[in-house]
Amino acid sequence: QVQPVESGGGLVQAGGSLRLSCAASGRAVSAYAVGWYRQAPGKEREFVGSVRWRSGITHYADSLKGRFTASRDNAKNTVYLQMNSLQPGDTAVYYCVEDLGDGNGFSRWGQGTPVTVSS
Image (cartoon, rainbow, N blue to C red; front, side, top):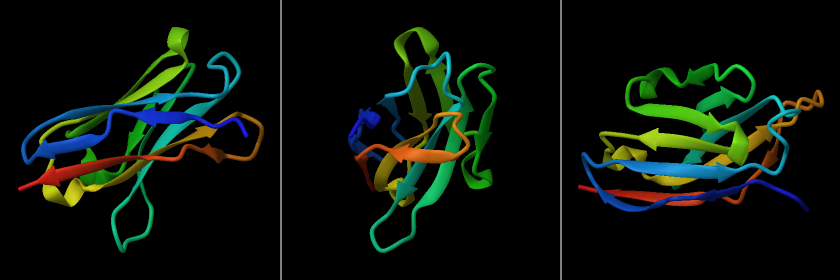
């Protein structure tokens, strides 16, 4: 099954930064948006942020505003998540998910990339 592919996760010290990438499976010219979610061990998956392909409009979880920034490169069909001032509480598997503009909302999930923030 075609799905987006995340990359860029890894181990970083507290206070550091990482940039995640999501190579989308849908075409930027026709799809609607890409979202980022994360799931920490023992916790439910939570919304991180999203970016719309055409307008570049972004949305974020209130608790992450100012530290995380989503962006897109339409020519590369790729979405990014810049994460700054990382804390151990940001440790999680990060997923991107596509809204293909087909009425199904965020429906096509990647397999995730792990991020570990050490104190």
